[in-house]
Image (tube, rainbow, N blue to C red):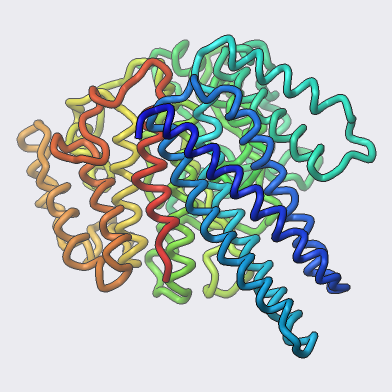
Amino acid sequence: MSGVELGLASLAAADLVLKYGRKLIKLYKDYNSADDYVKESILLVEAILSRADTQVGFLKQVDDKLSNEQRRIQFELYEMLKDRLHITVSKLESVISEKGIKKVKLAFVKSSIKEVVEQLERWQRIFDPTWLLIFRTRDIIMDTELQTKLEASSRTGPVGESIAAQASRETLGEAHAFRRIVNGELDQVHVTLPQEKLNWSQAESISFSSTQIIERIGSQKRYLVNSIPCHSNMDIASVRADSEDLARKLHQINSEDCGLLACYGLVKRRNSGQRKISSLDLVFQMPQNDAKPVTLRERLMQPQAFSLTEALNLSRHLAGAVSYVHAYHFVHKNIRPENILLFPKNESNTSLGSAYLLGFDSFRSVNFQTLFEGDITWEGNLYRHPGRQGLRAHDKYVMQHDVYSLGVCLLEIGLWASFVQHDGETSPGEALGLTVEDFGKIQETGKPSSFIKDHLVRLAQSKLPMKMGDRYTAVVVTCLCCLDEDNDDFGEESDMRDDDGILIGVKFIGKVLMRLNEISI
């Protein structure tokens, strides 16, 4: 389809999503259940669909500013949700119209609405990054249209407003905050925190992680802290500017569903009696579930005691977090199980809990130049693309390098086996099938080598299908091969870069995030 045809088809599919959504809500309400779960779930469905309605209304006004790739992704997303809602509406109409016992009907309605909520929430987690990427487009029309709709949505005011009005105001407000980031309007936002407000001497470590838990002095409030050491050979001014920029961006996060935590602020730590900054410390809010977190590394070293569905959901959440990282226009540079924190729902090992990506001590803004220094640790090189391995990295760090690192993590999750063991000393896990000497080949040549990457691809192709299926395997291989010249999904970085840094993010959503969410177990 041409760009115009894609745009029209996408908006037509969106209108059908909203049509089936409204019909579904009416069916649930007409059923007139007194069940509290059903009533609360109806409100949640209304809120999600109202958010989608607001997004569609805005997209209709700026469709000519979107790329064909953006239109195609949105079309596929709307088609996916439209078909699912249509099937649900048909089933619900059939059951409600039949004569039968009300208790049986209620059981079906509750099951139906639970499934709808899960589908809508999963769909929203995929769609929202595409929504944010739209606002990376630098065009005055985007600002004008957003301001007009935001002012219109604010006229009602928060008191006594409907669910639709509230969803519209919040959705446009989030977009406006993100747009301010894109336009560089947050430079004056204060994010610096006083060093003396946190109890550094009582910092609590997390096994295998550089992230620490630190309490606020005079309070039981706890925060997660990532420290960026400031060495004498570093360009402190650039690192400081990058850190402040990241803190401002992540300060805007208001949902834990994106796999990232809101940044409370930045501490510029100094040793006692010295003016020189010793470290820059990013301070993150703890999630509402205030449980003691564990790293994914620690869980991978334990037997699998949960369902494949939980493992798949973990993979989806991590891919979503990477999508948000790139939407905010920076690269993480250190995606590995040590930097993925899990907050268990209970003390049993039968649930993985909520997952969040941290470990921002190596990140950089896309706008700043990459440092080409690396290191020779085998466990570090395991998660790096061949072009970023060794003491002197060959390639500039780009977004696809994060995608590669994610692929290694998804492989570990799919096999549920740790590639790194910590038994007194750090050694390769049995499931990896490599020795420390194998990694020594990288150190000897000092040049990029695809040896490790090729081994991981073979491992995925031979072991993953029987554990997670062919579709999951294909996603992992796509991530590991994302910078291969013959990779049809991503291709070379030079073929994908655009001024706004949008196309890579859109490709990732289509080739990784959507495909993971299409898998059923």
